[in-house]
Every structure is written in structure tokens, then in C-alpha cells.
Amino acid sequence: EVQLVESGGGLVQPGGSLRLSCAASGFTFSSYWMHWVRQAPGKGLVWVSRINSDGSSTSYADSVKGRFTISRDNAKNTLYLQMNSLRAEDTAVYYCATERKLWSTRYFDYWGQGTLVTVSS
Amino acid sequence: DIQMTQSPSSLSASVGDRVTITCQASQDISNYLNWYQQKPGKAPKLLIYDASNLETGVPSRFSGSGSGTDFTFTISSLQPEDIATYYCQQYDNLPSFTFGGGTKVEIK
Image (cartoon, rainbow over all chains, first blue to last red; front, side):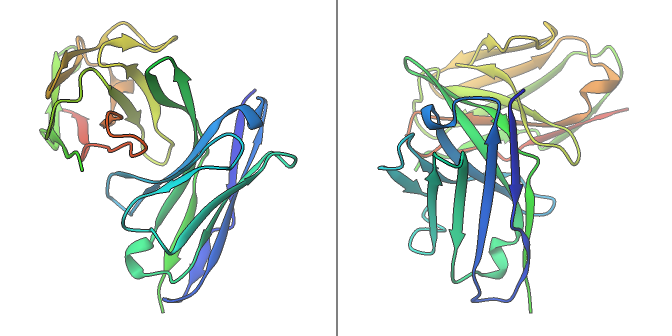
């Protein structure tokens, strides 16, 4: 059974840092591109970041570029999101998700349960 | 950046009703569009990929159509378990996967 379990969320002050983790099991983690998606309370889904299967290529939404860093440890089957210089508008549930690639088709087929990050003084 | 505009933002319908949601892209995205269902407190779930392909295991009352800039998601006969928020997602402008604003579906 595929499982993605996020952790590391919590309350942090503006300007602070937090590192999220996403532990993967039930599939060959090292073969999949991975994503972070966030959802502010009562709001919609927003794509945050993507990393390729070996970690050599990353991309970010403009809203987090320069502040967030996505990485992965394929030996530990774990995805990370290092979040620095946090702002109130970063408050959200953060989901990790797998990207399924079939020729030109792309979609997110497995999602974690999410971890809540609250940025507040 | 490609913007995805969903409408309506919410709707209320009776069990058995046909429900239609639209998603408009700010530029041509071919058929690079997916639809997800998100129930309260849960992670999103893929329903439709490439605009019209039903994900394995998803009930056939769900369907999608469209290409270019205009897309439609339909529930042919609304069931109580379909109460959720539905999102479209484009992937023409990789690596960004932009979501629409969502449509909350409620039972009348």
C-alpha cells in the first residue's frame, strides 16, 4: 500500500524556519518526481515545489522562491521542504504528492494527509 | 503564468441532479487538464486526467470534456458521497501545476 506521511508542521514565528518531511512507503520512491502543494485555511490548492527523481532538478512557485528548498533522500525514502523566512501568508496545510508521468500525461496520483504550518507571533 | 478560472465557486443541488463545473484557462493548454475531488479534512483525489480520462476505480457518473481553454466536469447523477470541493489543474506550463480556485458542491 502506498503511503505518504508528512511531519514537521507546527507553530513558528514570522521570519522563522521549519523543515517538513514526507516519509514514503509502498512504492519505488527513487523513481518518482515529487511535489509539495499547500492549502491555506478555507482556501484552494496551490502548487509549491517540485523535485525530480534523483534530486538534481527543482522548481518553485514564485511566492516561495528563494525562501523554500525542496530536497530528497532516496536512501531514506523521504522528501523534505526547508522553509525559511516564513511569513503569515505561508500558513497552510502542506501536502506532499507523487507525480505520475505517462508519455505527455502528468497528474498527482498519491497524496499525504498533510501537515499544518502556522506562522504567527 | 497560466490562470485557471473555475465556476461556479459553489453550488447546491439535489441528489440525482446533473452537476456541471467549468474551468477556463487563460491560454491554450491542449488537453493538459486534471480534475480532483477533495472531501473536508482529506487530501485531494484524482478523478479525471487529460481532460476526459476517468481514473481507475472512479465511478462512471463522473466525466470530463474540453480542450484548448474551456473545460467541463460533470457529475451525471449527484450522490450524497459526492459532497466535496472539486479542483481543475493544468500542467501545460511545466513545471508549474496550477489549480483552479475550486467549486464546493453541496446537497440541497
